[in-house]
Amino acid sequence: CWLICSETDLTGDELGAAHKLMQDEDVLDTWFSSALWPHATLGWPDKNPDLDYFYPGSVLVTSRDIITLWVARMVLTGLYNMEDIPFKHVCIHPKILDGFGQTMSKSKGNGVDPMDLIDKYGVDAVRFTIASFAGETQDVRLPVGYEDPETGEVVPQTLEHQTTIPAGGEKPRIKFPKSGKSYQYTSPWFDPDPGEKVARIVSERFEYGRNFCNKLWNASRFAMLNLEGYTPAPLSESDLTMEDRWILSRLSTVAEEMTTVLSRYQIDVATRAIRDFTWNEFCDWYLEMIKPRLWDEEQKPAAQRVLVGVLDALLRLLQPFVPFITEELWQRLNEIAPERGLFTPKKGAESIMIAAWPEPPKDWQDPQLEKRFERLQEMIVAVRNIRAVYKISPAVPLQLFLRCESSVADDMQNVAGQFDNLAKTLLESAGADVQRPSGSATFSLNDVDGFIALEGIIDLEAELERLRGEAEKLEKHITASEKKLANKNFVDRAPADVVAGVQETLAGNQKQLQSVLKTIDELEGK
Image (cartoon, rainbow, N blue to C red; front, side, top):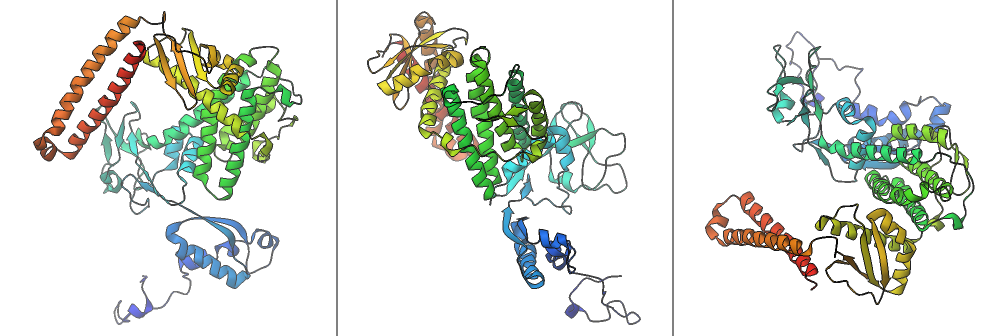
């Protein structure tokens, strides 16, 4: 029998006069033993090569709630026993809480089995998502649910699910409303019966990582499918197009940013930086821009060499966050393009795990080019928006007129082919004297006014009639919402969420009406 208490709390007769209390000689305070961990695990107090090599360490990763209990004590015992601190840096990370804001723990029964998440989303998707949580101060809530193993329906976890412990009888089950079926579920308190179909834990937060991994896989696969006939050769500046120089500038900028933020242990910032570059710039823009060159025998060799060099560096930047996918892609890249690189090709490492961290030259960075490219992207997005507003098929070619300064006009003429490639649009003219065609749609950027000719593309009169009808309906909805909100009884007595809903609907309708009226003005030539 053991009593856990302070010695001063004892009276001596807790077990009766016939029994004498003895202090156990083989018990060590858990935090004291943990304080010895940095050197005791390496053979201390004996001298040995491991202790000499690994002590002190570089960084300790921990939660803020045990800084005094653990971190400070490791420093104290390290200084006392080793005459040196046990680590140079301490990375203090936030905690992942359950959906109710509680710390996850065994005693609460609210822990999440990572294997359930890995089975559902994939190990790299889980790793990437959790890395995106790793901010410096803000704890993260992780609401979870249980998934119907047959239909995929998800029932949110409740506090009752966390705390239910079977008392020797049938194990608890969750009923799914849509299918009407019930299943045992995963819990820290019990294992589902053998042979039972199990409702396992899922969380939509991990769709973030899975979607990214799918995007990376598909983009890399597309790139590799277009490397047929690849031959390694040095590249020169004259081989590079504007989009090549842009992606290399962005690659160098992002690699430098990631190196900086990772040295500060800002893991979440690094994941956002590499995700944005991969998804928004490499996949959505660069791959689309180089498709015509990859399909042109004369331009293909240079395009392939830049593409394979960028993909090589991108995979190395991603390796710490998605190690399994990047290793698989790296091995495939080694088969297709064993020699690659920017600007002098060399043999790729046998495994991405031993490949060097990429450090693209800083002189690749061109902030002015990046700004010019942002303007091009904004224009293409504006043209696509006009297609959407007027419901114009992507297959229908459009004519674009740009009113802008001569320097901007020259830039746009140099990339005129990208308007056709990315927006099925012909750049008819660009310059300071360009006039707006009648019956055209317009857009305005900081230093450019754009016009899309609509004559012959849409039935202007029919479109005007439709838009006027839509405006009339919106005005009626707006009037009804304004009357409700002007009614003091409604505002005072209705639930706050109902009032907020009316306010939100009003704001949305007002914004939509402004857009419709602007479109009407454009079509009327105002």
